[in-house]
Length: 178
Image 1 (cartoon, rainbow, N blue to C red):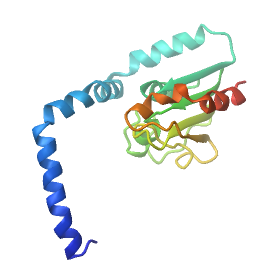
Image 2 (image 1 turned 180 degrees about the horizontal axis):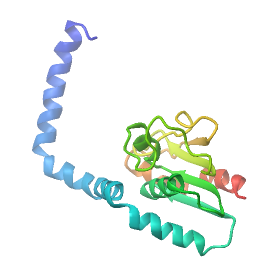
Image 3 (image 1 turned 60 degrees about the horizontal axis):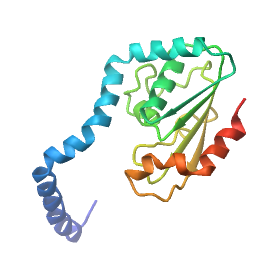
């Protein structure tokens, strides 16, 4: 709990931040809408995307590695949780919100705090502390997910796409390929 001085300082700062957000609401909403809208649409109507991923995996000779960035990581994770995908040996998520959605009870096929189903393959999760859209998975799924924390040296939001310029990301993936 903050003392009187903390409250005295916090109020004007919160007022200024609120005024700024209200005046720029359309711009802030417009900037957040495309990505948030895509994730929300998947959460509500993701069946066709999961089905398409299943068809794609069925057409590929094993071993298969599913690699998904951001929403792609959510789609891959949720598809693997829903039912086994024979042939998939490794899940790689990069800058993904899957762990956050699980923790908040919003991942469609796995309710928190249920454990990851046994049929989900090895999971490598790569995130950057500056990427506010990438989350750690290992603390939520001990022994089932391996986290690699990178430092792409980019501020957010550039950090969310900077994984692909970091040789350490490629090394981490290559070391785990089946």
